[in-house]
Length: 441
Image (cartoon, rainbow, N blue to C red; front, top):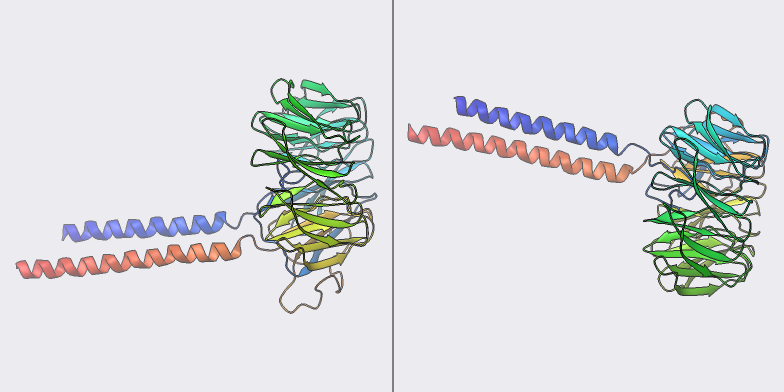
């Protein structure tokens, strides 16, 4: 009798543990993947594992008092974005409700970066600011000698920011103190990328420089042959991708600075390349969005918009999301470049989209921030032809998308099946033990 009770206790414990594990798994997979800064990470890959809309519907819009060149960041279900009205805004991800704004003394083209409880952003007033993410109160500011158009990059407890004063700065993220600075040959309007012990900057002097993140000492310098570098660097698999004004796109070895390949472009690429599915994706001022094989540099596909493309793309769910100066925001199939949908925002789009929890957020020179999500089945507002259901100044329309819903359901179902199998085994073992006891008797 005691043995049977012990066995039942073991089976019950296993049941409880698996049940709790299943609940924890489902809970964890319902958390949105953040997009904490420009092109998501310090390597500027621009890639998210979030779901993303196949058929578009406006979730919400929010109007600022100036053009939104800044690219949004998303963290802890909040959206952070700068405006040319001189403010950094914090909005609710799900409904666009206004949370707070922080005033600088110049336009904020810089894209914010969120880490922990702090938001970092540059301004044309020459300062890099650290702001409390919950209250919008200033923590510290770091002054440079000219306007800041670049976006901050965080890597190994250092904030990297470039300024039109021709310098790249490494700054302590807690105190705002300068750790080191590096002087380039011209203004710095491209954001730094980092990996390992290296930080990469492509300046307006046409040079790509690899610096030691701890000392700021040059590891190597690569001359692209152009007058200036037009994109921020992207790092993936020990390769750097960057374009200049010749115009050409380059792949350079991260460790040595050796050129691996270059590809001639029809026009300048001010759109920084992002990477996913074995390709790099970017736009050009001739209105074309291109995909090149990341390994070889061969053209995979190109898609033509009706205006120049200065915005950098974002990738999720096998789609490439990018805006154009023709006023439309596009979703393209990542494998072949076919149009999935487009939406007429109006005004030039130089902001790059942030993608989180199935929601795509982007800004426009029409002073408006748009949030898109998946349209309901058989919805008439697909492919940009329907009514804009969102309202200005952050009014709510509907709830956001669901992150990883299919994966969550499948794996959750697997855990439940395992649980049922264990219970059945327990019953069989129990019956077998009863039979053995009777036979002995």
